[in-house]
Length: 521
Image (tube, rainbow, N blue to C red; front, top):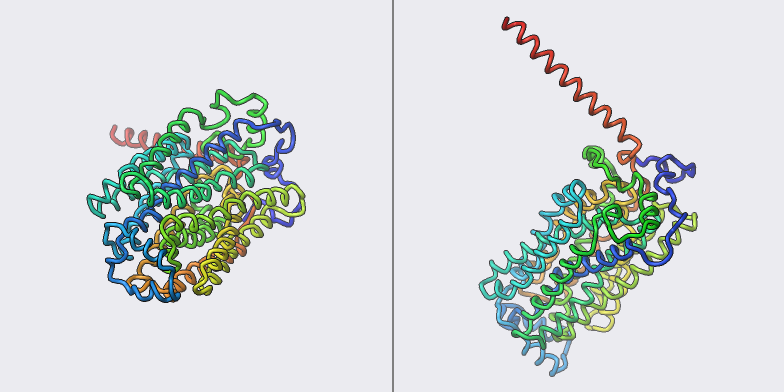
């Protein structure tokens, strides 16, 4: 239950407090909060580069012709393929004979590590701050990325272990970014700034996939190893810059101007909070808006990870793209997603500032575009047959519309609970990635030994169905209102109750000790 119904237009104490000074005394030009947003954007981009580069690299690493698969389905199902293209694809086979199922486990190993550190660092970032956890975690991710080529040569168990550790390091990126957004960004700027940060995911994917394809074909150290050396070095440089030049919050920042600091702190009073009130676990777990975000997040990750990890393989097996073209074509949908996410974030902020829509309506409308859109795209792409242009175009449009989620459920945590947003994001992101890590495993089992259009159609149908179910659940139960279990006005009363309870417990203990002493005498 929210603090007020969405139809009640009377301003509540919390509504007034949440909007305090939002529209007044806004500093002109770019400020420190924009610098923090930009660095978080680059951090998110680096995180997704590390996450997605294996999807393209594995196409170059695996000796596909040595696998016991139905090559007739791969090579002739769509009729004659250009001889030069076929020859080029075959010449680019790698050295590792890994089955589709094993490839699924290698691709998902990153996410096993990723989910483990979500909740712990969401809680720790609330208590000790997010900056250090984020920076050091990404440094671990980057350094172990440099070790991927060595691990692959040592054997696939070592590769799985290294990718698992990379996932552990990347775990803090989302909850810690969310926690920092809650401290740095005023409520009226969150749709735009939040979308900008999370657009780094698409930007990183757009950079990673085509460059990974080019490096696989023309890079040093045998091609595909250069992917991990280049991106590992870039990630390390970002980590050092982030730890040196980004502060935890406006109060600790030595470079922020006083006017901007005042603007941020006034608008965030009682929102992000400088105190650490008890986390209302029971009320959170009984909150339907929280579970609405959870389901939307789970559906998003399953569909997204299906495409992100399997699209390069689909492009090779069904549409017969060469490795250098594969990266560019696989990146196109994410370029569309990045551009659309920026556009729709401006639309979302306009809808809110116009006064014609409340937060709940905006989140539901934009999120519907973001999750129903790719579902429809997957259903259509599954039936485009042997038409590479149509398939790529449909996937580009469908995945492009997926950018709506960054102004939908992805910032909804900040609406319902600004003070616990990082913790809520840690929970939803953890379970969402547990769902997402199943995507490459499920796809691997479905296409094992028979990577035909019919089998890939099943993969796409499952992902589209998950999108639709979870988006519908979100539309029914979500809310854009701050929830009553995140009321700063109750902090003093709750603290007094806790102090009184502790005092009564101490009195009973003292009385018991006195009675024991008298009995002994």
